[in-house]
Image (cartoon, rainbow over all chains, first blue to last red; front, side, top):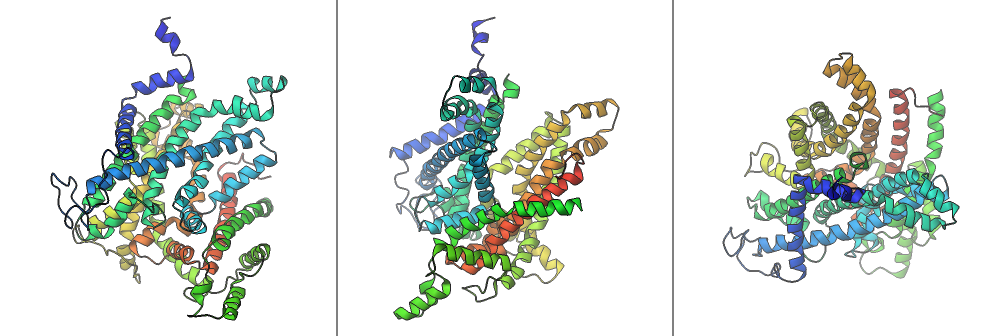
Length: 288
Length: 317
C-alpha cells in the first residue's frame, strides 16, 4: 500500500480528498471565498467606503464611474451592493456559529439524558418554538427588545438551533450506546466530560454541515426581514436594497434590484453547492 | 373507537405544548409587547384616565393573573374586539382566514404535486441527465429569495414594463374570473419557490426507498417502472411525505402568506397578524397565537392517525 493510500484513513482526510475531487463543490467554495475577500476588504476599509455618499444624479445609468448606476438619491449601487456582502457575512457568521453552538450543547444534553427530565424539557422547547410562526416570532422579539439592532440575530438564533439540536440529539442517542462511552463510564469519567469531550466531537461532521446550511438560511431570512422592516437597522444590506427597489422596479428602473439579487443569488447558490459537497464528502455511509 | 380513544389521549398530551406556545407568545407579544395606553387616550389625559385605561387593558394586574386571563380567553374563544379597528376578533379572523386560504392553497397543492412528480422522475433516472437537470433546477430555485421571486414575477406578469396581464396589487374577488386574475401571480411565485425545496426532499425520500430489497425483488419479477414507482415506492414513502405536508398546514393558515399578502396588498390573516404585532393589538394576537398552537396539536394528531391509515404496522397505543 502506498503512503498516499495509508494517509487517507481517517474520516476527515478521506472527506477532504473526496471534497477536492468534487468540481462543483470546489467551484462553490471559490465563489464563497471571493465574496469573503470582498467582505474582508470592506471590514478593513479598503473599498466600498462611499456607500452612503450622494455621488451622482437620480437613477444614473451604468458608467465607468458608477459601475451599476445610482439609486433614487444618487448613491452608487455598486458600492452599496459590495458593502452589503460584508453585512451578509456578519449576519451569516454570527447566526451560524451561535445557533450551531446552542444546538450542539442542548442537543447533546437531550440525547445523553434521553428519556429524562432534561430531554423532555429540550424536546418540549423545540416543539413550542417550532409551533410559533417564524416571522411572527421575529416581529415579537423585535418589539420585546424595543428595536435593538440585534433582535433579528436573536430571533434567528432562537429558531435555527432547533434543526441542529434534533440531528445532534439523534446522533448522540446512537453514540452513547457504543463501547467507548461504556468504557469511559467504567473508568469513572464524569458525565459532562463524557458528553462534551467524548461524544460531542464525534458529531462534528453534523455541526459543520448544519452551520453551512444555517449560514445560508440566515442570509435569506435577512432579506425578507429587512423588507418587512424588522431586519438591518444601521448600514446597508441586500434586503434594504431590494426593499428600496420595490417601487423602482414598477417605474422600470432595475439596477438596484438586479445588483442585490444577483450578488445574493451567487453567494447563496455557491454556498449551497459547497454545503452539499461537504455533506456528500462527510457522509459516513459513503466514506467508510 | 380505538382511534377516538387515541385522539383524546393525544389531545391531553398536547396540553404542555399548548401551554408552552401560549406562554412564550404571551411573554413576548403581550407582556413585553408595545404599550397601548397612550394610543387609546386622547390628548392631555389625567392621571385617573390613564389608570382607567390601564385597568381596562389589564396592565395593573400581576403577571400570572394576566396569563391566566389570557388562557381563559383562548379556552372560551372570547377575545373581545380588536383595538385598532374595533371589530370583533372572531369576525376579523372569519373574514381574513378564508382569503389567506384561497390565496395559498392552489400554490401549496401544485407545489407539492409537481414536486412529487419531478422527484419521481429524477429518482427514476437517477444520476442520468433528467435527474441532474431537475436537481440543478431545484438548487437554483432554492437559492433565489422568495422576495426576489415575488418582485420579479410581479414585474414580469403584472407591471406595465412587463407583460401587464394581471393586476399589480389588491384583492377584489367576486367571481371565479376575478379570483384567477388575482391569485395567479402569487401562486406562480409560491410554486416556484416551493418546488426547489420539495423536489429535493421528496427525491431523497424516494431514492432511499428505491434502494430497498423489496424494490429490487419487484423489479426482478418484472413489474413495469410506472407501477413500481407508484405501488412499491410511492406508497412506502407516504409517512415522511404526510409529515411534511400536514405540518406545513398550520404555518400556511397563519403566516405562510405574510410576504405575499404584504407585497400584493391582500387583506389576509398573515397581514392582519403582522399589523397586530407592530401596533400591539393584543386581542388579535392572543387569538392568532392560541389558534396556531391548537392547529399544531391537531396536526400532530392527524399525522399519527394518518400513519396508522397508510401503514397498518403502526400501532396507536
